[in-house]
Length: 416
Image (cartoon, rainbow, N blue to C red; front, side, top):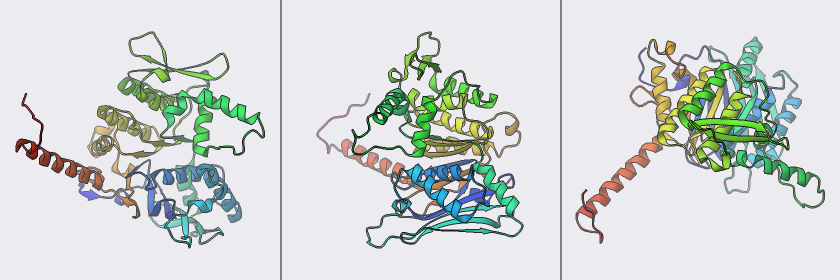
């Protein structure tokens, strides 16, 4: 197979009918047309819309995992608006319009498109907010209802899991949070304003609080991925048992030791990855959607690369993954796994290769449209701004070294 510079959307996707999401003036996003893949990677600076977009995908999953795409438009509109408010923890969906400093509100649109293997538009659901009123329109190409339904069901089937960036703190304090919520619920009138969680955060906490070690384990693939994650990255086991109060108690046992410790005593890395291990053991199954923020959080560069392998193993097992990352180590390893997917014979030897057609990488920038990062044979997928940062740091280092050698500084530097 001859490969040069290509976008993942240009590759053969016959095994994966396309589901696309197009937004305009949505949160901090000016414009985005994103083709959802088995592995969708969102990169870019903070406050550019990565979490906003992933939350939208999470909300749409909640709608179409329950509703038939042929439901009446008013039912779809009301259900979608309610789910958006829940997932973004907002009193009104209008608050999602992009702010531009002007008095007149910008028109916001959210469109969900399903396309078949022939890449023709078959089905489109569009939510538009020109001012305060919301309108929803739906278009279905004649004879394409079945294919469109297949595409939507392919992506929005199964359960949804959201691992937020603050998951490490939440799993350490889940018992305290649960007790506090119960206390507030039984002291009516004591609080002028009740704080709420977004749907993703609430469901994450609920899964932890209701976690039962005796529950039937996930399938063998998920269990094997959890075992590999513990062995390759965590260097120990994540344990779960019920406390005397009925809450689950999560512990960490380092390899080669009999002693266990609370997650609050273990490294931050352990708390960050413990929820993923737990959900893989009793929860996530093939066909589910996993949205994970910063999978590289608190990991050494070597472990960040290992985390990319974990994501690839999930894709191979049939889990749909959406990851937001700032890690060049993780992205470089994903590029290597995509190259392995192009080699003949690799697919029979390991379960962590990726086909370029399975991966979509998207660059978010402030006040600019979201763009797809092309896959290159000699560069993989690489965000443009990463190179800018590396070049700036290199030039600054060379300049400072020259100044020190020329005696321009007041200090001294001795060679070893």
